[in-house]
Image 1: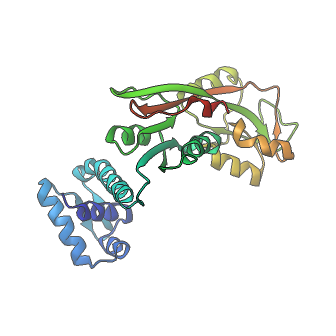
Image 2: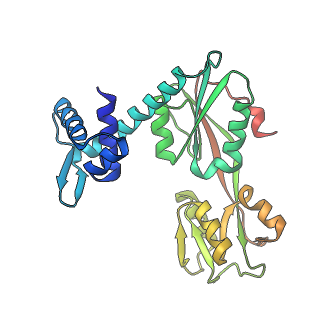
Image 3: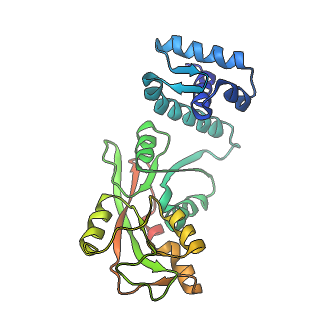
Length: 270
């Protein structure tokens, strides 16, 4: 299959327009149209619906999108590895959950990067991304909150991520705090949180990740459960205050790796 056609399809999906796709790829619109037509003929399906409002995926296009992203990613990685300087013969492709890069991901990357002769590529995404990248072979290790159970994949619990309650107000109440912001860390956290705070009001604002929640409370003030590793320096500086009476919640961190990929366990304790 023509990789240019795959990349063109993705450009159309991402920009929502054949014209904008041609601008991004620096080719003519007729080239974009021809590549899309060739891809649709190869698959026997209409992938894009065009209208005055733009270009949108058909149901077949939506099914293809995930595979196209994997193919395009693997092609980029193949080009990178093939063009690497002589002597850089060992490649490690690591996926790290977006919420785990600070601290956990940095430690994994540093441990791999310090070895001479290893080229490291890092991918960041959510749990479904990690699982898909590992299945497709785009990555050989995936650091996340869920064990990925597959033949040929080893998953190891390498530690726990502590979630602590911090606030810009040192006297913020544990319950009925008008400045409380809920960060959705998934079903397990939500159940634990609901058990302890069953009698509290609902939060006025919810984020699905800690980084934007942290940015918000630093700018606007407020209270939230955030990873201890992410806020310890801010607490030491007095910009945030830990509410010590609040319970600490934990999330287990898993390293999922291909059986033939070894990672020194000492990096998690160093």
